[in-house]
Length: 383
Ligand code: GDP
Ligand code: MN
Image (cartoon, rainbow, N blue to C red; front, side, top):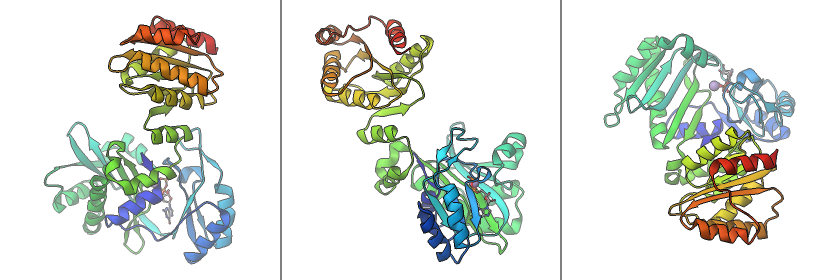
């Protein structure tokens, strides 16, 4: 789960990383005006959307008066911010208002798990700022990686060594140890899958502050952080994905027109491939999970049908622990309680497939015999 910059900064601050003074987030131009005034008349307005590269896309603006703050906010709020990471654009609903800082130097700092060394890796570069991707691609030696021993953690001298290797000024290096350790502690402490400060800014008066922050949380560990789960509601995920998340359904929305409901991630992906091969485009990934009861099947069908892009639904179930008759009952329940205006194609195999087929037959649904047949059928019906 991605959290917003202002939330990530709140997390970093808890772990002792200095952040710029801020007046919180605002979603109305008038509020922005007040917040800029509250900060002494100047403020940086930062679009809170889940993408990097906001600076280059007009998502970071500096206001030199509360009035200008209001004017800029009118332009920014509601805009579709298109960045290289989000080419379709993300709607700006909230701005973080910060006190401007005068940046002398921009450092990149990040922590990610590394599958090769099987350790968390601290990444440091003296070439931070808005072009770090280009630096990493063209001059990989300018990006220094320090694998962290999970038991000993990094010693201060190791952090310093990484900084020296990155070509950072020795005087500065001593002042970087504490914020870098804070970043590492935050990463481990909140069970993040990514934590990044870019830029870690060195100000004209020599302070080191996290001018930007990005944290992605490991969803599987969220239960250990009820305080952070609250951030989820504020993240601008797709509304259907958010609803699925609340219902505990593994669902990813895609751009096609064929709704897909399967059990097991592997079968779901294979089914998506089959639809693609038949010339259709999946509207979603949805795994109902093992042993799904009829009620859950109904919930899933309701979710998929609430996507206005869906022109037909393919339900492909392999009954192991899951019983096909339970699935069939769920489909019938859904048909009777929801308005199903699009064609449904069902394929059942395995445990109680025949009983399931019999239940469906009463509703006039004949299951497809094979997966490719089912895929072709639904694609033909959604054309
Ligand atoms: P990103 O483009 O989405 O990564 O957004 P950032 O928060 O990193 O902002 C982009 C750039 O804005 C930074 O690299 C800074 O160079 C620049 N910037 C200039 N002045 C300020 C300031 O006072 N505060 C902050 N946060 N950024 C500033
Ligand atoms: Mn940045």
